[in-house]
Image 1: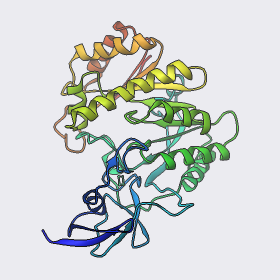
Image 2: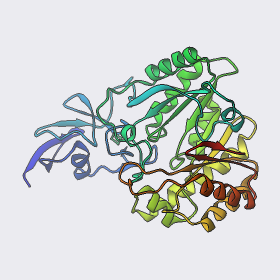
Image 3: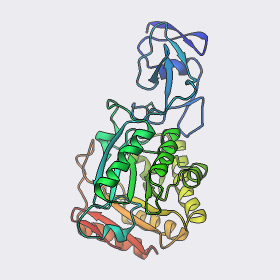
Length: 351
Ligand code: FES
């Protein structure tokens, strides 16, 4: 492959001609991490949605993971002071059911909307049956600042007359500066006691210090975390991931996050745990194992079981029918959990 010359942070080096800026930075010796603050830079989605990997190429801000490196390009990894983070966002849209951290007594309210939501592009997982793939994989839409996104969802709150404002994805916790600024601005625009600031996450990079910042400094009131199972093999199959060490770390972070919220914020944060089910990934004994692990932390915690339907690259999946989802619900009750809802093709059942 032809080599080209580039300058990285003032040092001349070489890169392959057809690579991305990220490839060029890696060949210059820089390390990319996934968790906030790890590595020289972070590139958690790698598909252009989250805008965590922003650098300057020839003085222009670009996403390192999807931008082609230029011959004689001058790359700087330090962004200018005052640079405002960006992120691709879809919505806002009103929601009549909400997410895994929407309390069940609101979901049960007949008719009308209970929440407004936005969805952030980019995810660190690669689920072949991603239920929201068109947004997750979007790298083309114009990104928005945290302030723009907060204004949009605040207007939607007023328009639909609701108190709950959710961000889901994709995975919203990628790009921590964007998310924390977004929630701070949202809190500023919605200072009333009724406003609920809801984060719907997979929980894989939601470390205790990140949770502390979101709750104590940004005013987040509702958090959803979604362990994909209790067994590493199941997690790998559901998420399409092959890196066992990373999978172990993701799973550990998810359960630590659940524990951390229950231990420290039981009185100020509503926690909802999501649990995706399809028999193609999981047998009933793992459902019971999951239930026992979670009920050991708190038997009252709300669990919302999502029925994986055919989507994206898994059109072959068979959507679980209502009876099968009620069987899952029963297995979780028998494992000690008291607040279990199941999502089905005929709406939510439970608790
Ligand atoms: S890692 Fe580059 S946009 Fe997400």
